[in-house]
Image (cartoon, rainbow, N blue to C red; front, side):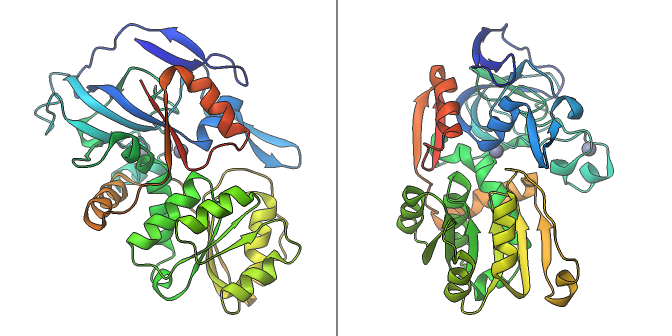
Length: 353
Ligand SMILES: [Zn+2]
Ligand SMILES: [Zn+2]
């Protein structure tokens, strides 16, 4: 089978011919029908995260080394399964499913709580295990297959990362999404997804911040109440005005020094800021403002299997609109990744083998 792999960090993805994997035990083999291209794929391709002040967290330090087959936003069609998969439940050849990629070790306390996404020995598809930039993919157990009957594979694929990341983060903001607008920083694939999920959850609406006028326009088209240019010198004042006195709920999907700074500067007393973006940098913060204002700063990392299942049912029930998706053939994996790297993608690119 063909895979498009990172053989050396920072260099073009290469086409590699691999033998077809044979599913063992409870494993399921799927033919990839759609594979989304995410910002995390860029970090995996580059090989590091920016910790600010010139410091970097390399993937090698986290035990992740090439060759890597990227993409964790995968829809696949069941081809075959190991001898123990059928008794483990619900695998049928020909079934098309969205894969929950945020797989853990299954044994640590986090996995036991169902929070495999924060496992200390993660096994995520497209990060640690081979992902969807390939003709076929293996999942370790049928429980990671989420039924998407009635949804298009290319439109369902982004739910596995962009979708569940924004869903999990919005849930952390609690009831205030119904009473206050949510300030969403970053109008890339995640930002547009957050606008749709917020609408499906019956939220009050989104005020969207981005540097790029094309992405701000896409946010308005998706139904944002207002947009703010992140580079405006008075961006914090504009957000305070748009929220009627300061943001009570902020979703930072960029996670860079200036965006977190803007979130804190524009937050109201009692404001809740959830950071999901991994753009990087660091933060110097006068500590008394956390108790005195008082602010909640919270991180959120992708989502759980339960949250992905909840999101998929929400999409089916609400008829939630898909974000703009442009499909490309799998053979264009490298160009698609480079276009995302250069900020040229509105919505999501999804590769079709
Ligand atoms: Zn675990
Ligand atoms: Zn992702």
